Length: 447
Image (tube, rainbow, N blue to C red; front, side, top):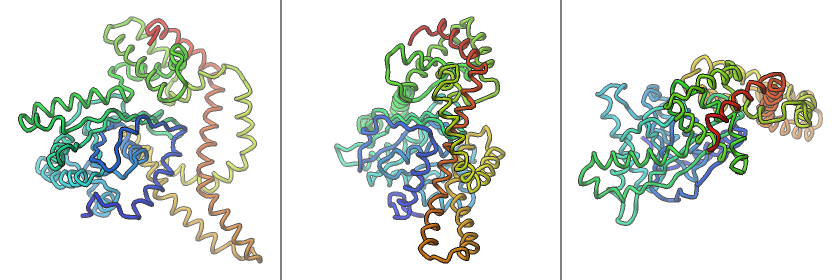
């Protein structure tokens, strides 16, 4: 088995390729407080886990160095897949559901993690023990702390393993073109707990687990209520701009996340207090969104003027003017992408893996489709050129156009969805959203 603390050159190239695509999956990306992550140190990232491999890639994209991960053992059943996962620094983690007899196999993964930390490398273990496609921090498990204290045992006096609380927030779990916010919190120094751990392991692990939970929760969107989850989530978006303006805060996704969390906390309290306006709010949200799950998209459209304005006209003209380029982009990218999206939907819809599967297709399969295009090109096109230089220039331009056109196609799609949501808001959705905000002003007059 490859030693995880070593980073082959091909891995570095692969990481550059992965990060380049990943950053373009979102309409905006914001990383906060990343200066708390020291270089050449034993760091354990502890993020909330709501979106399968997308969460791991968020950390890998934002981290200054490679990270070793643990992932559920079920995906390692195929030996070839297991070998590939090991190459990209992912080891299996066995849980009780994998069979009690398999739990002892965790020792190998845990030992490798300790070795990574001993070499002042980065490690990530999702502390919730699994994923859940809801914006809610679940109870934490203790596996991370076992690894942290085992690594601390090997540290020289004065050095500490650090656990970095991490919060990840997405505008949408399954669709591209929405925001990503990544928040890093104040690290927990394991050395500060080590003497207590030697005296009483169970009590110290519970203490540090509670500390980590309390540091993670403010870094993410945390909605407690299950019965009113969709209502609270949508309301936090509908009311965000008004609350931002009331606080006179800069309009960015980080501040919007803070506002949404404060709104959600008060609405959770309203549910607990059986506020009689909550059922009315739930009905208003349903009237506004119907069966759509694109909350951020329609909330943004609601914030725009509820009439045809220069921005909407400009966007429509842009769609019309660039439609030949969009047609070219769709010709080479559209059909594979729609096929990928259909397969991902069929295999993983409502499982939390849909976006990961789709993005995996884009990472791994789209380049082979481009290779197929190149082969067909090499067989059929050269005969039409008599000038060698012209052929070379045309070939280089066409090859470069393939990934660029995919990027353009996605952004054209996002612009189209923006225009569609604006028109729907003008046509009536805006009135329904106004009703949501009117009720919210009574329940959450301020934050």
